[in-house]
Image (cartoon, rainbow, N blue to C red):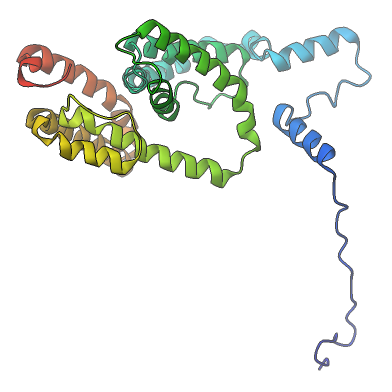
Length: 287
């Protein structure tokens, strides 16, 4: 038996080699390389003729030149089916996000199909979803709406939205240097804010707040409780139950995944027909 704090007979003590600490410049350079060139695409450029280097560089920065020559009709049919499936979700999603940002719905539709078209040329992943997000729409409405009223000066508001979108796209590169826990916390808080902002439409309130904290939203709802329309609330709850039911069907029977995929589109179509036939605007339901 080995003595306390010692080693048993025959055992060898090995020292642990710690890596030498890197300075900030070296760490930052390594992070940049990992962010922009994670696959080290230039390692096989050595010793290759200049035309080959130019071809590989073009295929790396514009990937469509790499996969399009081998594109087949069979792949097109798969892409067509995937496009129809995604469109059933992207169209109502784009309209909803435009509503969150207080901009015309047509811009939300543009944001649903223009980014994927651009990404199909410059993107390299087959599974990445490209488009707008609710977090950005909500934050834009809260920040710009505090300075410019979209109803009183829609053109200035729209110009500021476009400018903010451009700046956000440039600064989005910084997100790669944030920790996963930071991103997770941000997304969790954003989900809560989105749910609170949707209460205006569900309750049919005419007066609401641009603030995003829970206390202010609840205070405004209680203050304007006389404006609550039970018709809007009933329709909103029915559609929410339907959407949750389709997710339940997808979990129980994975083969019926398409039911959950087209559910948002069904809600939009049914809601439009119902509003038109029942003249919903006469019953206090916002159209």
